[in-house]
Length: 226
Image (cartoon, rainbow, N blue to C red; front, side, top):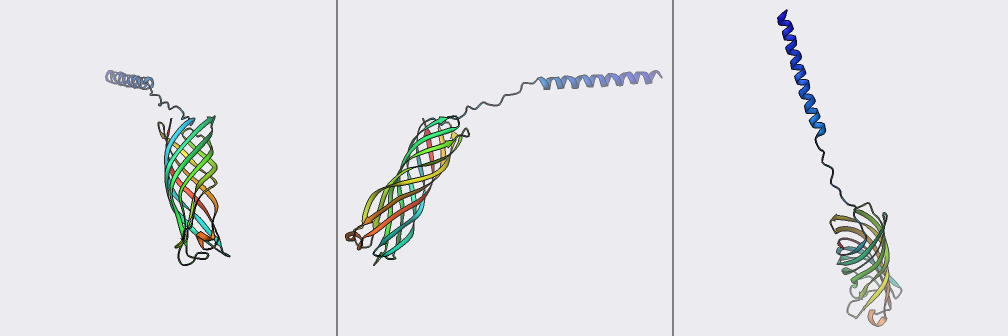
């Protein structure tokens, strides 16, 4: 009987010691300091920026003259620079942006009113001056944009002079810009560009011919914000 009592007392002592150790461990775990998440200040879109852009334009041109008309596809690469300024009010961002690109958008047709060869429409440069309105989700800003487009239309019939003229038109589109790190942001945008119509006189195009040009421009850009 005495052995049973002593065994019970020993078992009780072991259970008590284990419980006390577990309680001590739990207390230490509960009081261990927890590292606070790193604070990240919201990105402000207000200020000037400069950048580069590049992409591809695809569209069409139509030659109309002498009672005939021929429409055909055009396409080519673009690359250039960007300048802009943003004002942020709450989550709304208002901006002005200008860019100038070298362009290789071109296409050709051999249908009437072209005769004895291929007629080509080419756009060698393109510039825009646009307003932007965006909505800031902190570091990401989708936006819509529109304004003035200026570029050249070069119409080249076979064997004769043709015409090259600077035209002012319009552009509208949209995109998204994302702050990737520090002052750097990347954007992807779409613009529809219409440079209107130019006339190639009979002395330069055999018959008086109207030539128009429009393009869909998809391009990416990298900007540095001051």
